[in-house]
Amino acid sequence: MKFEILKRSHLKRNIIVGIATVSIIGACILTFTRAKYRTTESIPLVNGTINYTPYDFKVIAMYQENNNGEYSEIEEMPSSGYIINEKKSYCTLDNVNKETNITLKTIDGYHTFSGLQKNSKCYLYFDEQKILLTSTIMEGKEIKTRNLPLMRSSKVEGDTTGTIYKSKDNDGDTYYFAGAPTDNWVKFAGFYWRIIRINGDGSIRMIYNGTSTNVTGIGTQIQESAFNTDYNRSEHVGYMYTINQQHGNTTDSSIKDVLDSWYSSNLASYADKISTEAGFCGDREMASGYSWSSEPSSTIYYAGYGRLAQNSSSVNPTFKCSNSNDLYTTSSSSKGNKALVNPIGLITADEVVMAGLPITGTGISATSNYIYAENDYWTMTPCYYASGAAPFYVHSNGVLSTYNAVSTAFGVRPVINLSADVIIKSGNGTSSTPYEI
Image (cartoon, rainbow, N blue to C red):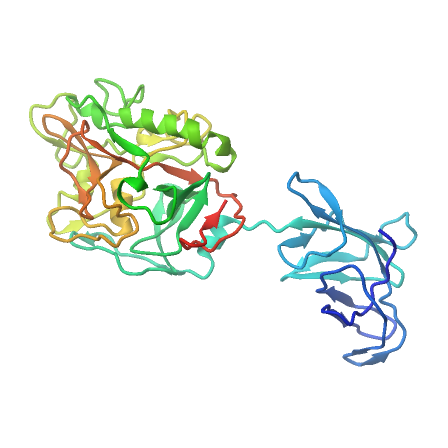
């Protein structure tokens, strides 16, 4: 690229120049989009006019980061979506030594040079501006909290666009969606997802919503499956289980086999964007007043039932997992049972209630809630054992339900956690323009 003098253009380009005195150049802020400029003229300054052109420095070359992480030479300066690489960019007077008193950086969208001298020759490198999904989700949101416990009949199903709710999980503050938001859509791996929450570790938990944004019913699931084909022991409420152990994890459930197979076929090639640190809670602790048994002679209830269904007037959902053996994680995670091969699971019953669905038996439903799908689908939260093991599931009438055995075929809606550092390409979270990874 030939040497070109940076001069004031009569095209659509601006140079903002501030100086303290005639002899000292303070800063030159460039908001131009091209490297080629035309005639130089006197530029009026804050404290007078200079006919001398000390801003005649030369842009020798410009380079832009490409998809391979390398740099390609460009002729047009990127005006948005890119920032100056401060370590690689430099200016020189003698073509040998770099000028150490010059600062090259992008501030609030402006490419800013300070400390320039006349005849400085500059080499500029531009990196694509990385925008974290977590930051974009939170930007401009109204943060609300909900006092627990909730009324048993409580629900959230009105338009909650622009609102996110704050709570706690095992890793700290978690921010979750509830009601009928229109700004929690994600396109990832060729599928559409709804964001459930930002986990306490910064990862983003999402539930599968189909191959387009306008599907309902069976279109929001990958297939139907029994949670477990075996049902005659209380262990069979587990996403994984071990016979004669309350918290064992040696045998895969039927639904885990389905999810593992789907992950291998559809998500394995995107593994670098999926968190292997976050987990999935299948709480097998017991409700107050009940003791665990493999083949109990009477009904036993799990802790999820105690939180969400046992009290006649209130529910007390939680994002915390009380037993690490029930937090399903991969071997590379620093927490949980490390029993998973693939980082995939299901939504919890507590997350369903936090999202705004009421518990069954209240005569109230929430069919406009974002988590509603017009079909029955499984959660991974154990509910009870009564001559058969039974987890919670989301009912097609828009409530969290308790009454069905693991051997029943219901919808399977995968849940994954995107890594905390995942970058978005585009989008604003709406169904027409989802966040695209």
